Image (tube, rainbow, N blue to C red; front, side, top):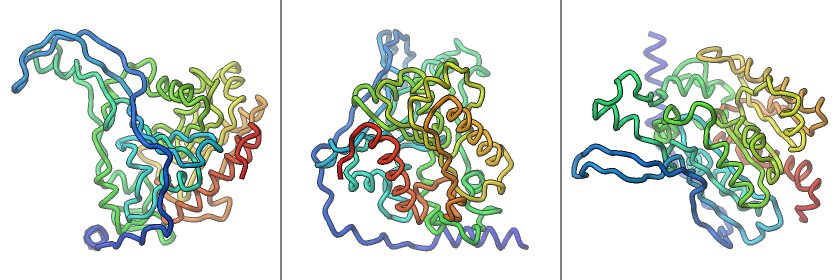
Length: 352
């Protein structure tokens, strides 16, 4: 009976209509906006006939990374921000929140920060290599070698994103707008990361290349991409002015040389609340502990690294999707304050 009540409550939550908040009083004024691709590789392929397309032999581009951007009028005053989404999601993560409030992308732009939103390679508008799927269809590759396509259910997301102890039941202090959770579920899309090279995710290389193209950038990763800023810095750290890692497991097995490289990049790690509420399919407390260890390692290597545990700051109830939580503006302000102090003041930038 209790499960039935919980499920009924979940249905009620997603069925309740919500009214988008009023638009900001001031207009959003931009110097420039647009989109482009970073990276990609050309491969010669033989494609079987499919639908109205004949069999083909020629070149295709794969593993290119899509970037959309907005530059405010005073964007040159600050280091640009590059925002990368997590598993089973896209750059929509950073746009309008599920309940219709201003997302981090617009909020940062209104704070005079140029924002670059990335779709990970193999997701959304970025490219991926479809050869394995074509080969299985043509019978030249065994079915068992078909790359997997990762998807997450509503039930798994509710648990792993830490909306509540059971599906449809929110934590008493939950900051995620659960009345609009159905809008989040619409953002969850198939993940084709299994098509990527095993030795390195090309998104890391493209992120480093994007920072170089911008001449300077703060890289912000979340969840699956949480450690991507560090991976990008290990490829080429010259234009990476800061790394912000949001809720992920950190690599504590880096070499002394790798830690020395990362020590040159100011690093912020952020975690929300209720970390002990989820132990499967992985432990959030384990991820938190690994990142605390990583922060200590960076500090020992002479780096500027900080763990920002929101509950330790007295900020309670934040979910894994803290950039969409009801207090997302407050968290964004903390991020901006950290950048101003640890990145821009050190670079002699950011006049206010």
